[in-house]
Length: 488
Image 1 (tube, rainbow, N blue to C red):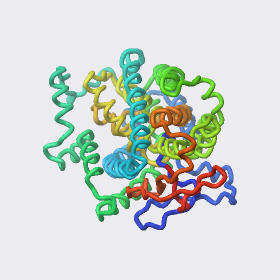
Image 2: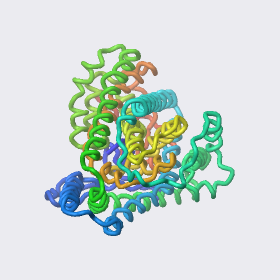
Image 3: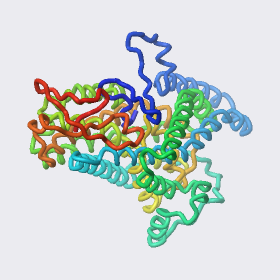
């Protein structure tokens, strides 16, 4: 699970506001059985089992006889319907999620915490852009050319467009920022135009307007639908992979899959062991590797749980033990769960190029620029559901004219594995950010004793302004006057 908005505040108290997004609190006293846990959306075991079963049946059938094209198409109906349903949720998901994300940032960045908010948000967006850029460069120059085309060699795409010149591509990118017909942009799935429009609406809409209440309700509905579709992932994966193996060479699939996994992990470790440590040393003036090793409980928990939100208490404890003031830690770490998605930023270009190259499509430089822009904006609009990157991947691929092929089922089947490394990188990025933000803002432990700003955790989801209130300190522990708030 990539960076999710924090749906639970530290005191586990639900907001009484009718417009707030209600977090689903699990009763820790009731233990779930193994099979009950496997029914939860996004669990890897059912997806792995479905993928292995599909591979076994597909190989057994394809080695015995040649499967007719009609049988392949009929067998793939269920998988394609599942994929079409995922695509149908993209536009409403992006619009509502982006509007709410911008409202959240507006709420957090006001008042006395403005300096802290600006540096924290700027740091997270900066590292995300760096991750996207080096991922696109490595993917375009190294990993993409190594992948093999698995598409039918006799197939010719009659709708394929002629490549644009550099000047045409630049002009087209800028024109796509502002659509001349917003209804047409939605109908034609011009997603960059839709994203920019959603960003503008997010800034302009009042937090307590009736329109925002409607956006919150629509977001709940979309999230429910996507959660159900992710729960159906084992069935969808089975009927995407099995017909694929009826007519594809398993050796070629395995080769491309190895490049996807190896390329993604290489970029993740490059960002984790070189980019973030260099930034940490330049700004915090500390040994990054000593700091990272001492914070190992956090990133190990993240790798094991594949959830940055579930790792939040451990991450907070680790950064406080390393000397980060509570003021900085309680703001930057939860905010990192909302917008810091370096791991996902690295993954998006890799998987889009994987889907393109396996169909014989080579992305142009202009399309890589679009991938970078959409990946950055998508990192802000991440939704608090398991495997939300699967839906966002469809969106980005559509934006650069890469059709969803049967290889998408392979991507879904291995997402659980790469998800753990992405989450570990995301949490590590949060931990590296906290001391750097402390240095940039000049906040010290003495500031923990002063009155500050109460950041209502539930306001992050309903887009309301953070309220200012005095905070008392007792025995070095900050106590807010509201149970469901965080002091900045």
